[in-house]
Image (cartoon, rainbow, N blue to C red; front, side, top):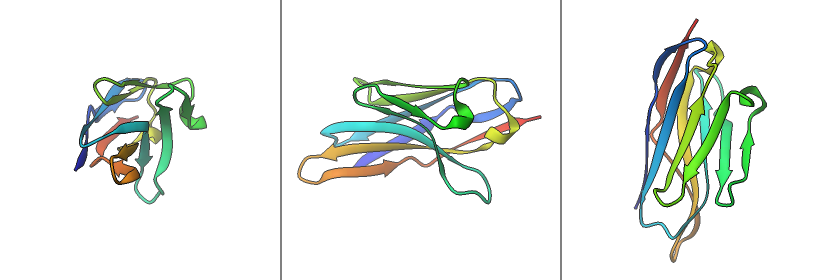
Length: 120
């Protein structure tokens, strides 16, 4: 069994900052990539940022220069530092892990989501 547990969401004023964390636990052989996605009401889930095991990062255009993704491999944790937040960043943020489990191959897991609300 694998679990992803997110934390750090909340309510913040426009221009403020939040830091999200996501810890992966369970029977994991290797994590290939971890990332953050978000879904606002009425919208599809979209990629925010992803980081690979080789530390390659990729960001949505809408967050470039404002958000930073990082990871601690030993702790199986991924972070999302969000600065200069805008009301349009309001969404439920989901952690995702692309990983390998022995005997089961490559699998994708999701966290339960954490709400981020940015007031104007």
